[in-house]
Amino acid sequence: MDRDHILLTPGPLTTTLRTKLAMLRDWGSWDADFNAVTARVRASLLKIIHAESSHVVVPLQGSGTFSVEAAVATVVPRDGHVLVLDNGAYCKRAAKLTSMMGRKCTVLAFDDAEQVSPPALAAKLKEDTSITHVLMIHCETGAGVLNPLPLVAEVCASHGKGLIVDAMSSFGALPIDARETRFDALIAASGKCLEGVPGMGFVFLRKAILDKCAGQSQSLAMDLHDQYVYMEKTGQWRFTPPTHVVVALAEAIAQFEAEGGQPARLARYTDNYRTLIDGMGRLGFMPFLDPAVQAPIIVTFHAPGDPRYEFKAFYAAAKAHGFILYPGKLTQVETFRVGCIGAIGRNEMEQAVHAVELALQDLGIESGTPHI
Image 1 (cartoon, rainbow, N blue to C red):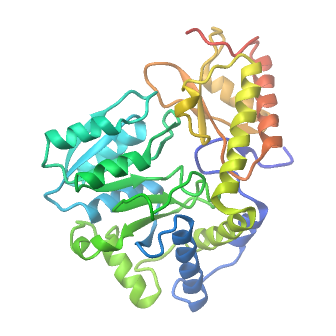
Image 2 (cartoon, rainbow, N blue to C red):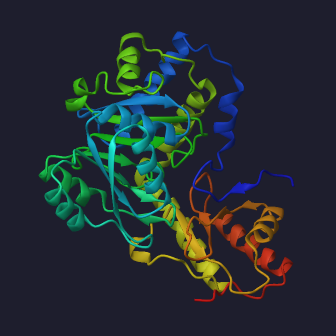
């Protein structure tokens, strides 16, 4: 092929040439020029969610999950009790890591096709007063559900509970305003809707809880309080930073701001989503979710009902036509997922639908219509 495959996944994503080119220079990890890039990135991140006065932001090496684990260990006391709102695979991962961090964990389960319920959360907090923190996924990309962050935050605030938000696949695209929505920690990463490359997470910590976070983490490398204090004092990362990832993110953020920030990014992703839904519908494919709870981030489709369909073959055929799809994350029904995010627009989404159509033809499948 004469171009890279386009990634229709929840991250890593297709990036711009400018973002790729930013990684061609080597940087000293303690050099003043690199420290200035880190400071600029941190300041820009705070502005995206209007958190300059209420929160600090702490970057951390590794994938987004590293930062979720770090946030739980840093924010939740060792005798704390975390309630995880579970409507998908990434919620279950959050519950697992919470338990592995040695924190008591309770799961409040919901269907994969439904939003988490603020009234059910309120009832649970009233029933079990030992719960100290609530952990929720803003956009659960297991199925693609958008969860009601402002309403969940209201419930937590009214009950005096800390809120930890995994905003991995929503940050930068879906509206989040720290002036209106109270949270103790919010976690995102470089390789998602900011359209950087993977390798760095970042956690917003509410200033009011910072002092209490000292010494709570059982990890040296993933202690966000220690990372914050050291970075404020020196401008440097405690341990070797992902230098190329950081400068790529700085370039990606510059493009994000030039595009018009979060509202513009949401508008482009929403147009991508509608283009995808319309095109796939013409091929007979059926989305798994009700549009009322669907985020314009990643769409889960029912697999075709044709007995010749097999995901690996379908994936390979779509890849041969230039597009990388994503396997389903559900267990009760066969699905696959198509992302709407990254440095792509309507043209690429129309091309993606055409690639899926060609993949069906390659496999001798007449329609994407499922057996429901």
